[in-house]
Amino acid sequence: QVQLVESGGGLVQAGGSLRLSCAASGRPFSMYAMGWFRQAPGKEREFVAAISRSGGTTYYAGSVKGRFTISRNNANYTVHLQMNSLKPEDTAVYYCAADLTPGWGASARPHEYDYWGQGTQVTVSS
Image (cartoon, rainbow, N blue to C red):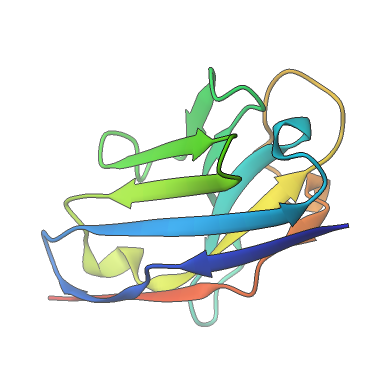
């Protein structure tokens, strides 16, 4: 079992920044890839960013590349999402997720993730 708890969401003006954190507990953190996804009202959950088990490889959705940065600290069992130059269209509930499937990379597909946090709201005002 893996438990995930997100924090760091809030209300920010367009152009501002937020840093999301996800604290994991349960199985050894280095055993699983981590991803961030988001879901806006009336829309499907979409991929934002993912990071491999070692942290050596990262992946981003085109809409956030160059603005968001995913990182992880395996010693502290945490993964972060630094979000800069935020836009109103970034408004959504953000979820972190853990993928326990053995492998070297990280997936952008929600159905490949085994555990999910409860989500944290990010609202960007124009």
